[in-house]
Image (tube, rainbow, N blue to C red):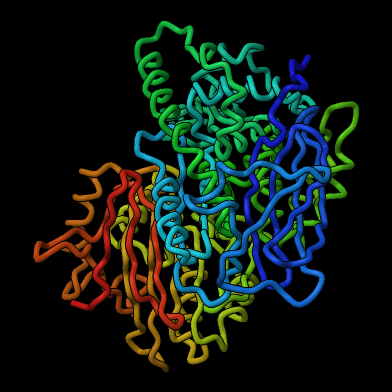
Length: 620
């Protein structure tokens, strides 16, 4: 039974400004009761179209489209807005920047500054860089300047496969507090109490049984069941739909944490290693909670678009065709994957396209509810057939956001080989979206032009038959998709300025790329910012940075053995005095990209600790 009560806060999450265009603005928020949501925007007369999805007894997700009655919204200026529930104006002081009386919407059109980042793990010990981004926006708004008009988050907005023990306990509390509706039994036999599930959920996740073979065969000596979920941190993996919903609320809303009794966030086990792990993660998580109000204010004042990567669902999601087969063979595995994708649709996908294509899933979703329980069997078919997770934003430069997860180019000769990140059909669609544009911002969750030494190590693991160990997910890992993508960039009608924004890798860098034998003078920038709240081991990244400079320097003959040998890749170091600086930066950050007339003018990192780094864009 739920212990949800009538004295819950009215607003549980938001408002989050999502897709913002001249003719409409999409906003998402969650309330504890069903309400009519309305907005006023500056001096405009507006009408609101609202779609409410009931996720629990006290949990209502609203996606609201605001449209002006006449003319269009002004672009690239800050527009004050107010929020009303059932005609009553809501107090939004906590979402206002200093000196302002209301939060603001900015409709991005001629892009001059963009915030971009990925990989936000709540219990990672680094600071949340969204707080630094909020400080940056506040500085501009206090001076009555717009500042960054768009926030692009390119993957791993949540870590469904890497959940802190304290977070899992908080999720359980929030499910009960809000009376979140639960999905039908998926067949997994978990311990009844969440306390008993801590750090052992991976033992209950589906596995493919080892197939017996002759004791004289090599495989006989390495017999083991193959897990469907290959994350190294799956001990608290999210499983049920209601858990994903609660996680999203706790990852994006400080209000949700006010409903959590922190005295109950304890670990009863006596394993010293697990006790220490639980304590350290809980300490980091509490720091994350203190920074959530700044993230909430940033979302309420900056148009935010998002794209999934693997951790939004699970590690190695669709990495190989063999992985896909293992998931498809088990009902519980399919449900876990679909729960991740379904929760992404609710909290990210609906706002990315303002319900233009994503609206198609609303009817089957609502039809899945009955008897206070979700029955998703029919919806799962619609979810898997849905193919429009990618989207564009018609700004200048045009923003093209890629889905590199659900349209994989599978290796038909060997299902154990890594799949291409996009299949032929989607690459052809990408080509159509790029041609005849002067400048384009391309959002690819994994870097298109990555670090060659790291890709070489990944290729070695793949050659040894272990692509899942080091996540062999780079554009160059699949011959067909790599060749087609590079052919697109070499076309004479592709943009003269292409800025690729990527994340995924937990370190940041800046590369510029030109075709050695191209038919027109164009430049491609590979700007990688990762993670917002995550980092790569610093000593290891320093070693890899050095190895890359040694083995793949401009003079190295090894460059001619890479798939992108026809492209000249230049690495840009950090800009700090006369001292030689690294090319690869492992320090939690969100990037601030500055443009002038559609071209890259400055690329800097806003670190979670408040410091800043700037890359030198001049060629050495």
